[in-house]
Length: 256
Image 1 (cartoon, helix red, strand yellow):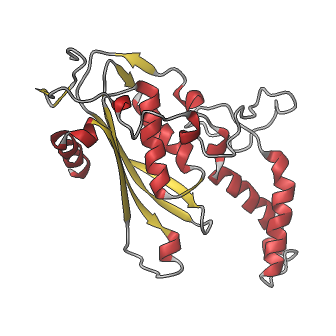
Image 2 (cartoon, one colour):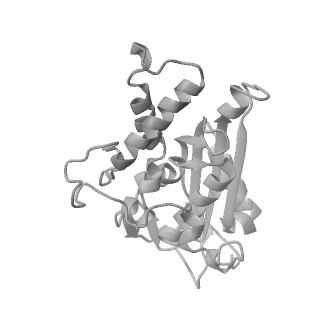
């Protein structure tokens, strides 16, 4: 339980940990720090006039209103057709005839996070709860697209936070990962965006995020190191201030 503004982890009181928002690394976070430039402020949905019958990349698991970007498909398909021709291929041969449209739809699916917002995905699944022990959800599958080469990177995300009177529905942590991974990304920014989003959602005493990724730009091209993995982390609040809290989180993440 919180006492005089203090929170504890693993049943041990911390000696006056600084609130998360008092830290210079997070005190000035605004929506632009979480949202990637170009993200629609009002995503189109199936209830938007003219889009009532749109079902493109509707994702039942994410349980969000299906946004539509079908208006972009013709131009994107033409671009993929031009690309095939530039590679010396014949885009009119049977095997490639529908490839431009398929590729355009796939790219829109890979980047569907641009049509989602934190508020939409949270859907008020924030609950008042007298719980001040660490909450960790680990090994959340993640798929994203490298913004430098437009090839995939994938891996797993582990998130921990120390509540201060509010908890987040557990599935919402996975959905936060989906929002920011389903965009053109670099792993370093993705890690920070996830941590900041959890901070904005429940204002905890601290947030920790660790991402482990395999990057196809290092596997299929370039140095071609198939066994390499990239690990990034963001520690905010007590996870940055208190080595014991950070160690507890990392032990939980790395335990089998």
